[in-house]
Length: 337
Length: 176
Image (cartoon, rainbow over all chains, first blue to last red; front, side, top):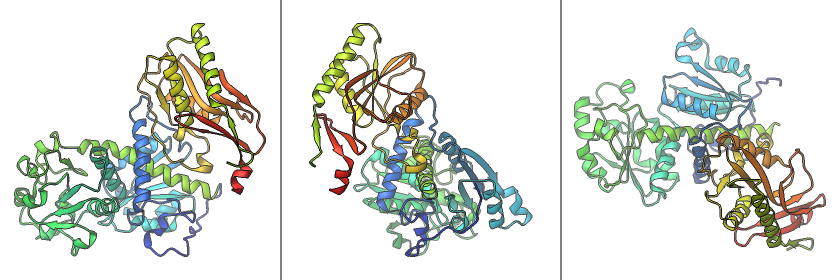
């Protein structure tokens, strides 16, 4: 097959920046952000993931859907959980996987993002999974890949981490079923969190009953209310009658000085301890996208306690990523066959 | 219902299928079989047989979506419900059940999936309707009814209670 670097045709009627996620027939081609998916696509992804979850329970955990395809993990930023679950998901779909750790590679020698991309594309890749410290990096790459290539955003800057938000929704749905009666609280460093932004979009798309954020003012983005959340600065008030608590990692590496007096004070006010957990509903589940800073945002006995579903989130990540990969690949293959 | 639609006597076909399997079991051709239906129509037929034959193990259900060979051209089919095989298939005699045997590709996919669960001792195939148009060397061990169809004709099986079957002209269906 000849490799061509012609830009993909972007539908002329595309009014939104996220319309690039769909091909001209309206099928999902890239997953860059939750915005623009709508409840139908989100539900379709979650339902498909449910099917893949049964695959991972059996002896041979592989299906032949992506046999002969090549998935390239392009990680410009450190990641363990996301990269390995993307890798495992691709392998369980029988794809070949190439992992490129670009934090230590050519980009440090001065190669531009586009040059790196074109070189890898010349290796006949079918799908890029991208993590980058710049917001919008995955969008940029999606605009420049060959027409048969799909791009999945595995986290870009402060902007978006769509598969994490989808696996969180999947985990909530497995425990609680319907979203409409639920109260969900996102706690901690919302300001620096792409995960939180994507979670707000997913949960509001699925019509969650009430979405709350609990954080000090300095760790909230300005005008966060416009994302459809109720803001609390006090844990006791914010956790009252909550069904789901999502703790966020305190992103110390992104933090400018002066946002927090000290980690100790943050833990005292916002860290999820057993005592504070008791303010939520007795059957509330505790989530964390990982990696958790024990003793900074969450107490060890809560992270490992009976209400914690943190490890389940990791397992669910595989099925959700298998679903996204196979849905995107089914669009990219049918158009130019 | 269009002019060329014709109801097929599904009950009689199920009875015939059941009788053949019962005879095979009495002859000892299969021992303590595990019945597995292919989504969606195959599960309805398998469920009927499972109740009639009074099997020890629960009914198995296969969803072959992830094993289809038309993923390249048609993409991922919408999920109905996941496969459900709660019993170990290793060394077992299996009766694989589908509603219509046409190209044989579904059965190939189902066998591929079964082997990802373990190594059955034997797989036998029971179908309600066996029609022409095979593209793979696959044929049923037991058949409710054998039918030769025109190029535009299809069999639509409905269910689960009762299981019905209609002969439909594709051309007609598109016109309507």
